[in-house]
Each structure stands twice: as C-alpha cells, then as structure tokens.
Length: 173
Image 1 (cartoon, rainbow, N blue to C red):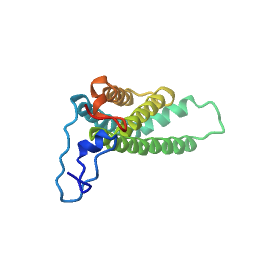
Image 2: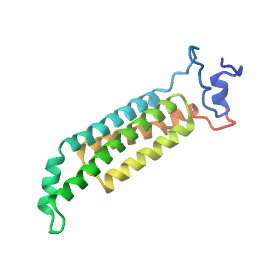
Image 3: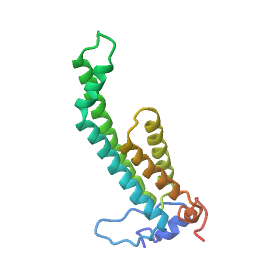
Image 4: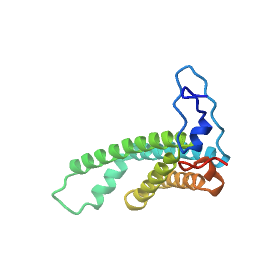
C-alpha cells in the first residue's frame, strides 16, 4: 500500500502508473509478463550496442577522414576542414547515442513497471533510431542496435501484454 491508501494494482486499474516510493520504504511491485521483461533487456542491450557502435566509429575516425579526403573533389575544402567536420559529427553522434541509451533504459524501466506512456515513447524512440539508421548512418553495429530496439518494441505491443498496460478507467481483469 502507498501513502494514499491505494495499491499499485488499484492505480494501474485506473490507468495510472505506480505511485513513487518513499526512500527507505519497501514497495510491492508486480512482476511484469515475460515479453515485457525480455523487452526491457532488449532495450538495455540496444542502448549498449548503440553506444559501443558509435564509440567504435569514433575510434576509427582517422580511417573515415582518409576516405573522405580521397573522395573529395572540391579543392577549396582542406584536409583540416574535413577532419574538424568529421570530429564534430562523430562526437555529436556518440553523445546522441549515449542520450538514446539513457532514454531506452529509463523508459524501458517505466514500461516494465506498467506505464502505458513509456511503451509509446519507446515506440517513437525505436522509430527514430530506425529512420536514422536507414537515412543517415549505415553500420552493422548500429543496425544490430536498431534490430534489438524494434524487437523490444514489438514485444511491448503483443496482445498477451495488453492487460499489463491498461487504459484509464479499465480494470486489469
């Protein structure tokens, strides 16, 4: 029971997330269905792979710069400009990957607790990651991260877990 006298199950039946716990107070948390638990770990793995992929790309920056210098046909663009641009781009992508990994972890945790809105946010994040992969960045490592996120998203929308994410006003039964 929480401070308001309402259990987490009663709050979930009304379509609300569990009430935040008070530090030091133990809370009963319902165990999520297997697909939701698996989805949580897939999103965590996706974030780790995404960061590792962009970290690896950042470490191989010199190879990227050399390839860009080779294909450059505009003589007004110097090697230093290409190197600076590549460095900025790769650091931006790396920081973005860290942000996405944190968001994946946070919202996967909230979905694991039964928050319906977290499922929607994860769907949008996975879609953005997929679009980014298809349009801008094409790497096997990041493709693996996108695959994990898409599979995790599909698991959250299975009919068997629909009851775990009740709409407001609906009961869990």
